Length: 137
Image (cartoon, rainbow, N blue to C red; front, side, top):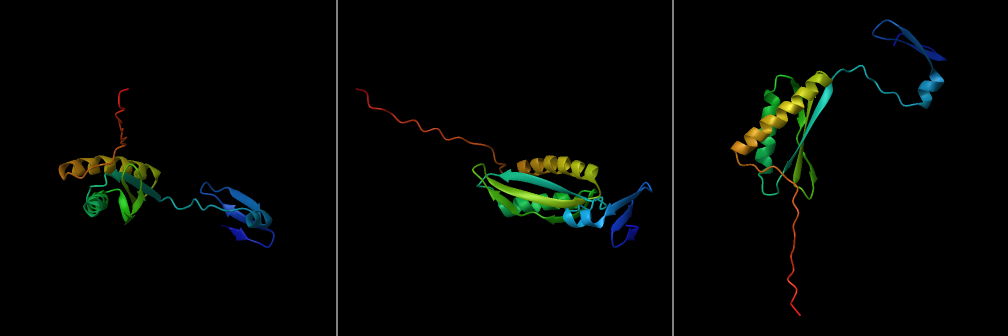
């Protein structure tokens, strides 16, 4: 921000342009600050209901903390209990959208490899089919 006056605000952009915005507009609309370049990588992994959730969370967090593009791991809570399984949702700060995308791809691949090694089941959609025998007439 360059100037904040009674009737208007002047903002200078990264490419040195000046934008004059009436304060009435600023007060009437939501403002989104896009100046922070950080981006959160959100990695959601479904586990089958028989999986060790704490071990799966520990592995996913360990992989994320070791990744060179991750700046901070925010958490890895159970986000949902669905018909497909238990959903973990790891959230980690990265320096930008490109880094966040790379982190997501890498974490999915590394988690799959580690979960397979440690016999932690990943959820998959399942359908139960019940066949009832009808007495013959």
